[in-house]
Length: 161
Image (tube, rainbow, N blue to C red; front, side):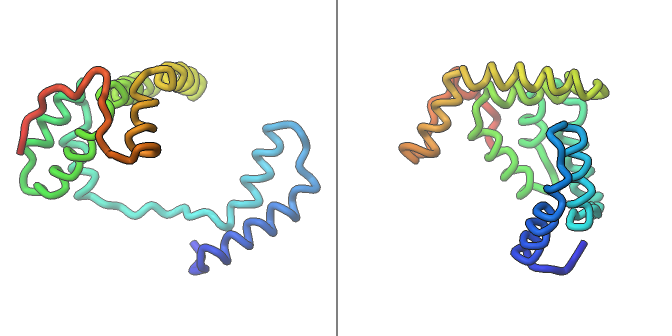
């Protein structure tokens, strides 16, 4: 990608959008295709390989059928203890319901057509925004900022490092 600063790239993107907006029609597909064409020169396309991270993700997440299995795997992690502890800590602070739903969606969506993935994601989003944990997370992190959400159900007993 370009070696431009973020603000320079944003300015270039804005100018490209303004220049191309005259030809954008109300039809969604054509509009999306035009935006893709306009923005393509500004998008980073190269994903750097990180074999160590790929291996960690494969070991601790791939094929795990439950959040418990992931957490157990992270708690016994060696030799990347710092990464495992931080990942474990981050997951431990999240809503158990949201973690389980996310894992279920990931497993459900594997190798499915995009339409089915979107339908499942929409159903999950409708569920989670009605779940008490959604509002509790907002309360604990945005309103009261106490960082102590009371999840429903509460986090299960997890192994300690």
